[in-house]
Image (tube, rainbow, N blue to C red):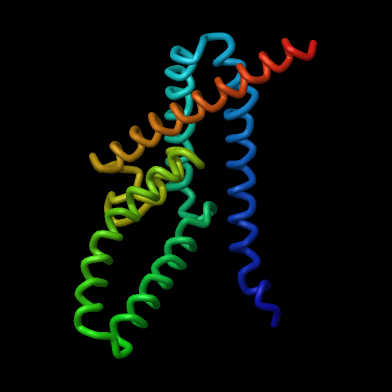
Length: 187
């Protein structure tokens, strides 16, 4: 039996989900973002694009919760990361290391857990969007498929929206200005 045939349905779900998200994000992040920034300017454009991103991502979160499928692959990624952390911890702590190293590692693992959430939050906010940030970092009812947001979920969602759209507006504004400047030199 081929190992991929066992996971075929899961691979298709994740592939279809990520492909759909990629199309939505590309259409929003490139043609629409550039037009809105050019038309409204960076500040007003950022505000309107942030409102649009919040609406789109809230709809995606609702859809993600209603389908009860892991079409983003986030559950798979989280299980993989936990296995790596557990394997590392088991190997260093329980395989003949000194007591000093155990204490250092336990302090590090406590600090790393909070830093991992912050790094994950910032990375997903900038390189993905608030949908991925809140879907990965959900705290409501212990599941990422709950339709109810806790206060912390709302903070993650709105904070990610502000950070992500500010980054994209700044990035797209500079790319647009660079393109206009280059065009003025060559044409």
